[in-house]
Image (tube, rainbow, N blue to C red; front, side):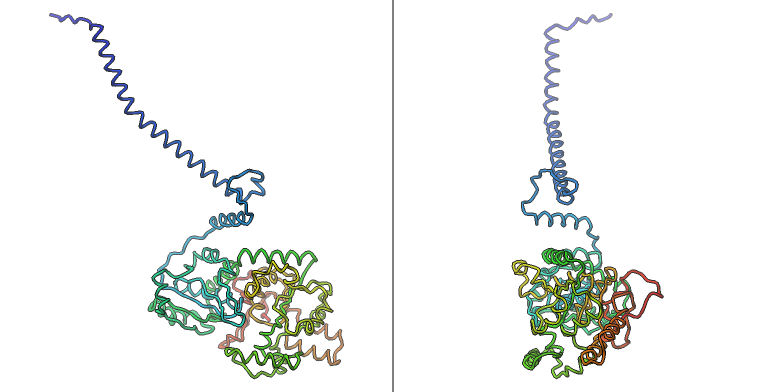
Length: 509
């Protein structure tokens, strides 16, 4: 029989529906917290993304603001305009950072540079190349504070230390200071210190220096001038020396900015010439060159030479040394040479040097021939140079920048600045640099002054002598077993210069 099912009563239907509703509400109650959490996370993520975009836009505004985002209001804009440029440079620097070179570190190299700015500059380039070759960590070099100039400047007072470190990170690891544990060892004197042999090749550093670093973990090289050979090195090492010199060693923003201002002031009057007139008291005392000096000045210079024990040569024949071309030209001789080279009398001449010994008396002839002789001290306000006072290396850095940008560069002596600037100007496109033949010039000047040669003969001879001595492309001269007598690498870094046809090359003079 079929079972007859009665329809549910209304009360049962109501109870059943109520049960379903309660279940649905219970299910919704379980779901809602998750939905709210998800929505909150979406909103938070969106907010973070928006703020990130705003920060990036603010950075771009500072970097490209003058052209793209000009006029946009920004709560990120600093009130100090210097901060704007610094933040922009940091952003740009982060974009172009090379990848770090990964290598097994053989130890730590500490170097103490000696000499003036450009002697130390070349040494820093050498030490960075050596550190790369030996696979060691280089500590930011210490600058000379005990030489004649007594300049207390640290590396970061002259060079952009962060740029130096980061720009070379794909070649060599550089630290501002030793790790704490090793730093304590140095403070306790538990390290090895020595001067490397001058003009050494890479085999010396591999066979003599590297074992010392591996043994002691820390090696201190306490002299660094001319400790790497000019020639006979791999091209890769030579190019690294150039990269350090022309790219990694940037001056601080303050020095760069002041240099740009001096250059701008000079260029207002047209082309300008930089004269590296190496006629300061220390140069004359060291070299023993006293031509044109009074008896009192000769005695003063002699006393000074004997006062410095590291100036080994004491008894010097000034006249003989001058005739051999080993003395800097005097201001009077320089005036004659510039006129003979047809340098126009209206040319602005910037003196890249310290205080000229003998003052206005010795400068009279040069000032008469060239009324537009200027110095940084006459172009700038005293307040501009107040932070540079008693910091000869920072002053030299300013002269270095101006020398690079001059239309003509004329050094009166082939010291470190003359050589390093010469090489840098070659690197920048063979900018005109007169490389004076002092031995021949002294002979010509004496003949002109004693009346045995007239002006036309003198001028013609000076121009003929220097027709091919203007910093043109050429090969370094090699003198086997006498590296001190051959051409200096930094005066003519031929491995780093634009490639030239073989028949266009001439022996560098």
